[in-house]
Length: 144
Ligand code: ADP
Image 1 (cartoon, rainbow, N blue to C red):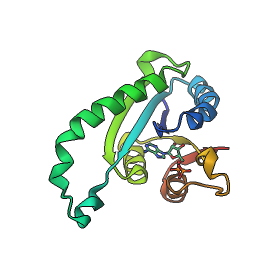
Image 2: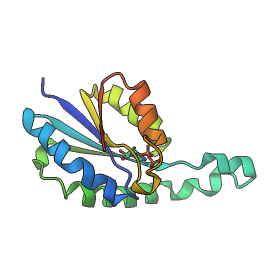
Image 3: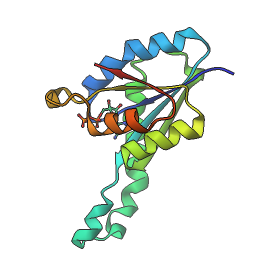
């Protein structure tokens, strides 16, 4: 069976994507790998605790997901990959939880992600990257 690569993308950080592009292209070339791109819209459900109520933000969810899919598609277009081996996913919620869940669901062979935002250079690993490295059942390539 061909390999499956999961590439989580923070659509608000274009510089992070630049770092991972050559690595993803390199892995994809090794065999007939399928590349799954995932953008997670952080879900601010905790606003409910401050009395805003979840219902007030829920109606926009579909619109936000459509906009995120558009941004993700533009980012994915920067990768030199065969169209028919690309899958795109947009989910709302916790980035690290969705990355780990999707890795299980698709039975990913490897997750490729950038270590952290350039502006956060004092940290060795961002919080999502750290959780993925710690909890993933498959290999994880952290690009620095
Ligand atoms: P930082 O806290 O510096 O942003 P993160 O750990 O959040 O560091 O980001 C590292 C990597 O985690 C990103 O390059 C990306 O692969 C993944 N990631 C972070 N946020 C998201 C998100 N909202 N959706 C998908 N992937 C994400």
